[in-house]
Length: 385
Image 1 (cartoon, rainbow, N blue to C red):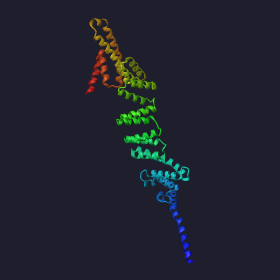
Image 2 (cartoon, helix red, strand yellow):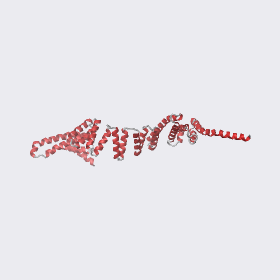
Image 3 (cartoon, rainbow, N blue to C red):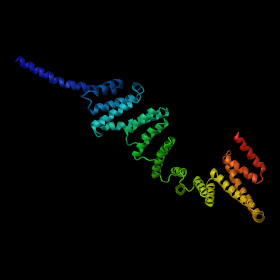
Image 4 (cartoon, rainbow, N blue to C red):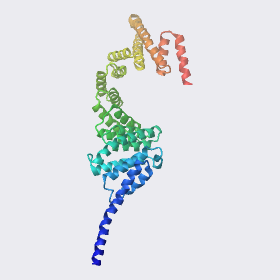
């Protein structure tokens, strides 16, 4: 009878002992919550860090949600925040809430609360990134922007600012990776393509620049800056007719752009289409009287017409000269006089431009304005010293 009693008693002890082990582990989570509510975040941290490595509590959403709250609280505390490594609070809070959602789903008791907490974490990560960027701690800024992007994968702002931070530290590969990520998110902007184009140029990567320009024009076919860039590429590569087609399209998109007319005028000059060139130079000046190139080229146009007239007169035999030579010289003088206001305006806009100084000095000399001619000649000599 005694033996039977002992067996039963032993069994009772074994059965009674099982819940105590589970309760002891749950107590770590409970103690963490109590210490958190009491403001003792350092003790709460110790308790919850034990709970997440224990098999009995590590698989529970409540454990991870509580851990997220504790680390977020420490991060936001001016006292307990000092006990954390830089970025540790944000990272561990994010990991904890993310794990709670994984275990409980977004609609579960703790998962639902964790989703709401994530929004606050995004703001904290973004603000931390901005502070690091302003302090020129670009690596820290990039890490925080990337964390913010991980918290809100659909958000493009953190990715964009991460690219800016990479550019600031001249990490063009990192910046390009962020910009490419944005393109993959179907994000497009003039600034994005402009930055990619600038980086390709800085790295002298002509193939990449051409690729980016093509993408930019596909996204923004009427953008003035991209059309002008495309025009410059065509001009630099000697594709004149193609360039003319591009600039005609650019003018259609932006008919009030003085520079476009000045550029097309230069192209017509190269093709010996003087009348068309003259019309474009005049239009450019009409739109913007301070367009140096257009003013200078109008001066050159009249200068060349004057030179042609004097050349014709000089090549005449005596008999022909007596009949029409004076007429050509008078015409030449008229064109020299017509060039003066354009050259003078160009010189006003760029006082040290040698081409303008030389051209105007010669015109003054041919018109008998010797004092003005000597004045400009002296200016030219001073520029060579």
